[in-house]
Image (tube, rainbow, N blue to C red; front, side, top):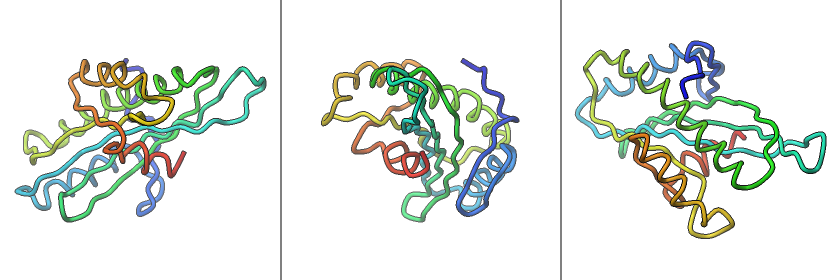
Amino acid sequence: MNSLNIDGIKFESITYGSLKSYEVIEIIKDFLEKDPIREYSLVIGTDSHEKTGSTKSSRNLNLVTAVLVHRRGFGGKYFWVRKYVTNIHSLREKIYAETLQSLEFASVFIPSLRLKLNGKTPKYNLEIHIDVGEHGDSRDMIKEVVGMVTGNGYVAKTKPEAYGATYVADKHA
C-alpha cells in the first residue's frame, strides 16, 4: 500500500497556502508540542466528487484527503491533498477508493510525523473518518470499510462522527 511518496505530496491550507509535506509535519508537530498536556485528535478523512468522464459508464473522481489536528476545546488546523482517480463505476468502488486513499495516506504520513516527533509524542487519538453512515445508499458498506480501517490498526469513525471526511474533505473536493 505504500506506493505514495510523502515527499511528493503537495498540501493545501486556507491558512498557509501550498505546502510541502515536511512543512505540514512541522506545523502539526509545533501545534502538538505547544501544549503537550492537552488531549488531541489527529484525523484523516477522504471524500470525493465525480468529474465528467469520457463515457457515462466511467466515473472519474476528484479525491480529497484531509488531515486535521484538533486540540480538544482549543481549535485546530487542517490541510488537504488532491488526487484524481479514473474508471470508478459504482458507489461501492467510490467508497473503496476513498477509504483506501485514507489508509494509504495514513501509512506514509503517520510514520513521518512520528519520526519528526522523535518520541516526544503528546497524547493524540488517531482516527480515520469514512464517508458512510446508517442513512443513505452507503449503509450496506459500513461493516466492510470499518473492517478495512480497523484491520489496518486505526480507529474508524462513520457519519455523523466522520467530520474529517463529510465536512472538511468534502468542502475541498
